[in-house]
Amino acid sequence: MTALEPSLTVVACGEILSLEEKFQGGTGVNITPLPPSIIAPRALAAARRRVAAVADALGIEGFARNDAFLHVDSGHVMIIEANTVPGMTLSTVLFHQALAMDPPMEPGEFLANAVHLALARGAASLRPETKTAT
Image 1: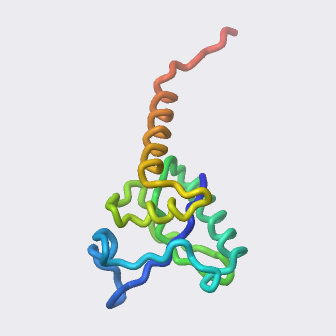
Image 2: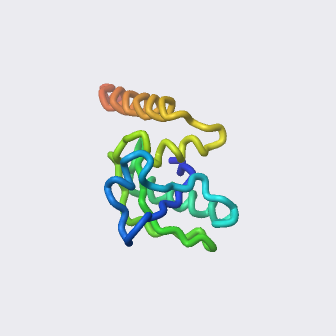
Image 3: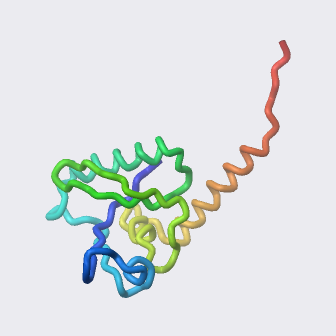
């Protein structure tokens, strides 16, 4: 599993993100990628490794949006939610994160990869088991 670049989500008002801020384009603020003035590259790399390890431990395949709290000095993360079927609108943070990768991954490419992974997974589950003679 590969962890994409994390995003910093800024709450516009109050203490909790509204549905509009999460899913409606032009209402929420996500900073992607995180600038070095917010998190040191070493802490960022540690956080990405930890998020990938959590995804592996949960058995996540393909993609998911893992909501977490991140300690910007240490790279420690606290996963608060693993969304294996996250909202997929034009303002979806997953697309911003994929675009921040090196090399950037366009939203269409991101979705095509997800479909290819699902098809490969489905094809593998349809293969008959081979039994060896004893």
